[in-house]
Length: 430
Image (cartoon, rainbow, N blue to C red; front, side, top):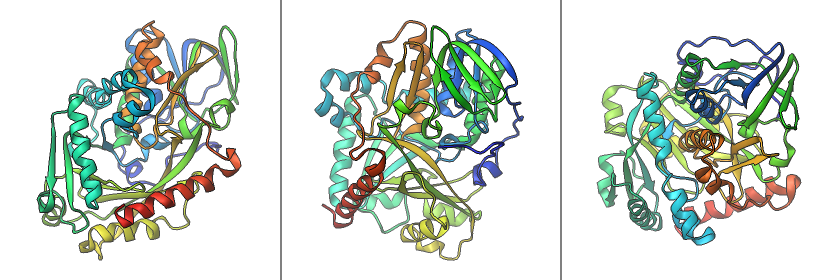
């Protein structure tokens, strides 16, 4: 997926309200460093910051701007665990793998909060999120979900059955909800910008507008760009859905997917307190889920849907606004001020892909919609494996990943067909 030269952030609510950040110059000339990170999103900046804290010399290359991709465009929800939960992991890969991944399922959340507190990052952090059940089957699933997460140490869960959920959401769509008081929501672009500034405060270097054109493997790795090159002892590939085809060996087992978000005008405080009384982030339990929350300045941010392959719809507001009104018909007269989309990277088993190429090129990608927290965990695990503590990284790297059926030609229509099937099940309550 190519990124145009001099690419700037999309015209999103996040870009419009981003904290001031410098424009980092593109790379000019040939340089050397201990570690080069490709991609200045959550994965890349998390890894770079952890490595800089270990005293390593780190250079980050970003094809556009810090947070240009999913890290600066997502729903901003701090959701624990992975896109596939531990019961599925245990059934498919065994109890030992489930325990290893389960022990890390809530760590990304803690890393985010530690970063915000330790580096005083202003990113509108708010507390709490919940999962809303649209039918009885989903509510039964939330009951099982609560028991599962409690087995792995999350004791901050509250199940709201029947009309009790109306305490949190003024909508008739649901039959119950599971509140995760340890979750939360924030301004994701400001988080990654703050983490980038923290990395630079430790001596790290970021070159924006510097897409990597070629990777030359060897005892040291050379990354060629249009303006120069970086030669590094070790490399971290953290481009996710925006890797631009420079490592085709990683592409067959993942697929870019687009999701869309709209943001209303600022709503009156009284209306906000009626719609989501305790200002939590919400996502429903459908296969093609809706997610929403209030921003710091009182706008309803509402997202949903998936476009397999990453293509944008012609009119984002026309796609997402009906979803918002199905949930909150009270907002029929609300103006839509922002509408944007972004790509995340999905894997066939919905679990993240961690690994290495040629011993000194590491990668982490494919969070399948759970990237805010898992990407922060990934950065920490990459730093661990580089200092010789690889057990936790290898727990992910050992997961088997199969290519999408049909290859690059048919993976989009086959995935869309599967999504239609599961979406039909959700509508019928199966």
